Length: 580
Image 1 (cartoon, rainbow, N blue to C red):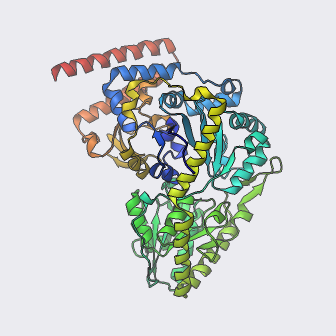
Image 2: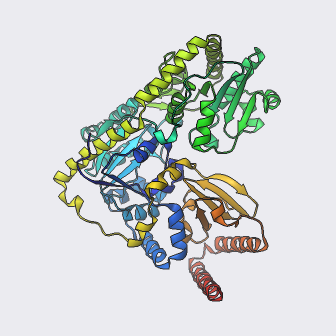
Image 3: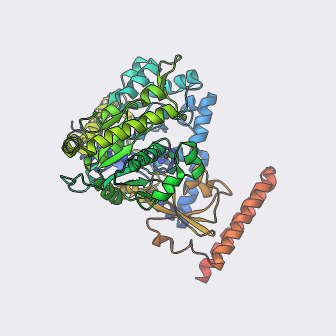
């Protein structure tokens, strides 16, 4: 397909910084790296915006006023309790900065939060996360489904919703059954899926000899979220490894994840004494975040990628297959889109039957995560039998590995995914323009916002970084985290809430921690190092937060003191500049 004309796409502010949605997730990297000609993508760069807010007072005042005055355009947002909760959760800052982005359409993924300022397209992998924050994977049944159905049906059936894409057929079927609406059905589109060639080495090794000691890798997720160890089956992998070692099998297991506590491991049947003895010998824990280059090198050096997960994890499977690591996965919903048992991987049975249930009220399959020793024992037994069989038959291993790599090349091409997706989006927008000719009218934006957009050379930086804030350094006086291509310095050790990670937060809400962003740790100029001045700043910030909490029940006094503090800060800044 070809794009009929130049198409400018706004990448919403919620994708840029909103933590639970894993903004610049590697699943969507091909749409950015390998987009066809005619597609222009616009997103705000947190690092650039943070610096602009610090030094450009006019821009700062304009943005703060914009956020405080923004109104949700659709009355549908305001007239229901669910709509008010939805807007409050996603925050007005998201809406205000999304409106300011140049673009003819918006691109949303995982959970939609359109500005209604322009039409939008939506892409998702799983059914339940679409309704975030009102629903979460692994927690059934869907509560308040009637109000959710009514609310989201109105959103998806609106003219502004151009299309709803997914690469998982079961997800589209669930959406169709849940809404039962012909307008929504007409917008459900099956997309291709793929992995960006920018994330892979030029060529994977053609042959990795299956010689002892064999090597296996467990990764809790592509975005390396430390909270998903048990959901991804890390405890099953450790118990399987004990079985292999007791049978005298020589090997090495790489655990790319944070190590849970002994109590958590014991609750899930793991022999912690075995883990302690084997750690550093046959079990290697890699707890720090790995860059994409480092992860590629690790995956390319192992024979198996072990992912006995309760839910699908697309990127890890595609990356492993492309790099020649045989994926060992479960029969959870969506796996069949990637792996064929004994053809190009190993599929362990029992997860779908044990953890997926059909809700009688909605006729939708939901997953439910809970401890199930019978299922765990079955997965461990299958894992042991299937891996040992391939270890004893190097020729069979080589055939499966070769087919996995071929399938990745032919079926999971990032360029084909991108061309197919943007081609369909271009067609949808051309059709929309026929009935909405005003949509191509020029939109006025704050000129300064254009200087804070992501440039073409920056996309790789955003996708290479963690999709959730990951702590890099902590001195007690300062803390450095990494998130979406930027390093973030926080004075002290404040308890960070979801919206606190926004560079706008401190200018909108009194008491929110002030952040400093940089593309490198060096760019933070050592502010995280302990010093007398840093300690004084930390004490002063702690005092302000304490007084702020004390005065909040008294709005008039709180406002008066906040104004005094603002005047004091401005005066101090002016004196400092004069002295310089």
